[in-house]
Amino acid sequence: ALLRDHAEGRGSAGTLAYMAPEQVRGEPVDARADLWALGVVLFEMLAGRRPFVDDDRLLLRHAILDAGIPDVRALRRDVPAPLAELVASL
Image 1 (cartoon, one colour):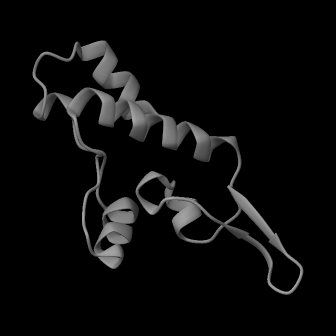
Image 2 (cartoon, rainbow, N blue to C red):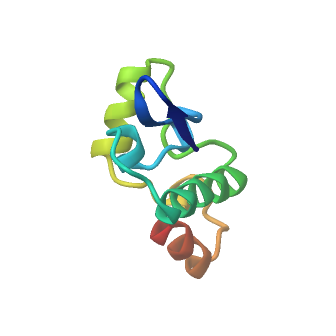
Image 3 (cartoon, rainbow, N blue to C red):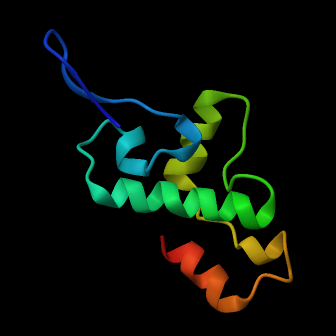
């Protein structure tokens, strides 16, 4: 999501847990941010939780920026390998 504020210029909005790293950093976003969010949703659907979880927003930001995407099969061994690879690639 993008915000346009005449006083502030351009910014982003949305739920932190679904934001792409560039969006978290406040950089310009494009369709790749949508693919990232799709990957988060698919991960959540398969694993029953988001890939990055923390009640502390600062720690959540850190996880999104610095931690790699967890392997969904670590939480759900029955996820087929090709589907896990697709989720990791988004």
